[in-house]
Image 1 (tube, rainbow, N blue to C red):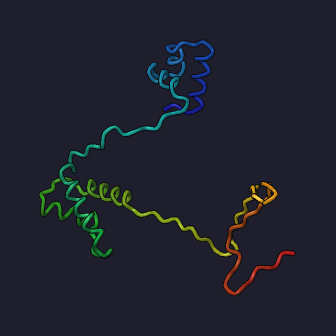
Image 2: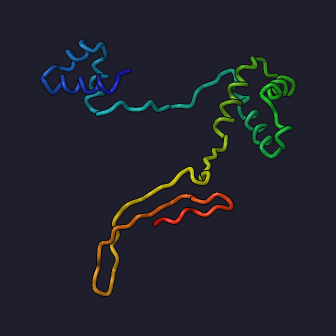
Image 3: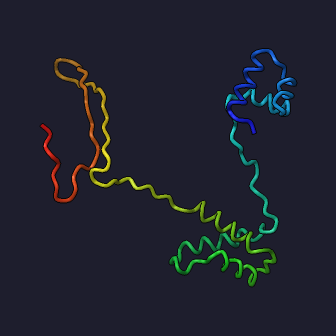
Length: 166
């Protein structure tokens, strides 16, 4: 995989007159890759063209998804673990493959479906934000530019008042 520095060096070499074949030989990459580097200024992220094929798990995916969807309505203690899913598939559906396939699939499903929580509150006197800027105010005499300061933060702890600013 090419790094950003190599992208820059390839582009510089091409600008200095080196041919694509010569650049490919110098860096040890295919000419197709060199052409791709010359078209795009930065490395392109990998995009999955088709979903991953899991031949051993294939037909059982829908069953596992159904079980996991049902589990979302159940109390936490009553939800199926990967091991319980494995035993159920083996007994009810005749699943003949290993436990690891189901374990990885269930873990990936839970990772995708997990709810994210980012707290937006902060402890008192722990954080303050200041914003300095300029605003335009319309007065009867006309529009004036006024400097402003905005303070955001929780200055008080329970039972305390902030010190007066003199």
